[in-house]
Length: 240
Image 1 (spheres, one colour):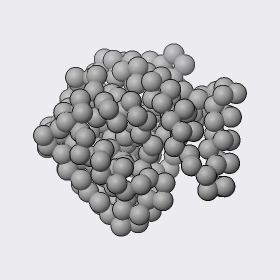
Image 2 (image 1 turned 135 degrees about the vertical axis):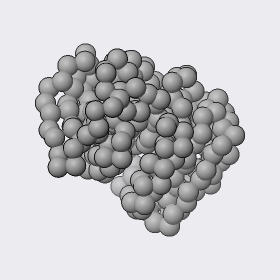
Image 3 (image 1 turned 60 degrees about the horizontal axis):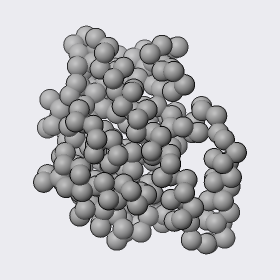
Image 4 (image 1 turned 180 degrees about the horizontal axis):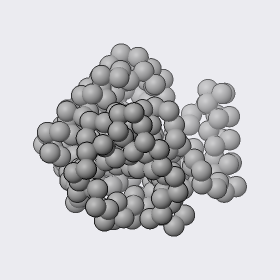
């Protein structure tokens, strides 16, 4: 892991960009000198690690006392896109503008993306836990499909907060039964891109014996800020 830049904010949070092989990422650490528990944070469907909503959540959790890390998924953010990536994104945009079904296009695009992203997150986790300022345990926050894939195979993940708004491929819907960590599942009741019943069925499928569903009125990007604060309390219960 090679750090390429750093910035200290007024609240003491340190933001550092890093590269790990071909993987670009960002690490936020709190002002305290004591080693901190870690939250892995991913944006739905591979949106960039620098997306404003993710950065705001990450800085808030770091100010609360957590180390927070995010990476760009293959073909997303600062990483090069293949011709197939570009075509898939164009097909999704065309179908959505035309009001056509998009599930099979998403399946063909997001399924392989998750398969590539999960091993990269595990490699990143290895490198992060080797840093003296991070001590674990580890939580996960954000992109549901990757969170399912990671929690199903990674015993170091102790709790997961998932956003129901991202497309979840069939393989991860099946894998959800193998996820047994404490779970906080956030659902926007009027999400125009995520059928409500499909999200409720996924919540029911999780194998966790401790799982909580928070549903709020509003569309895809309308998750209230207080859910970020509640999320920190959720991680406090399971990572401290």
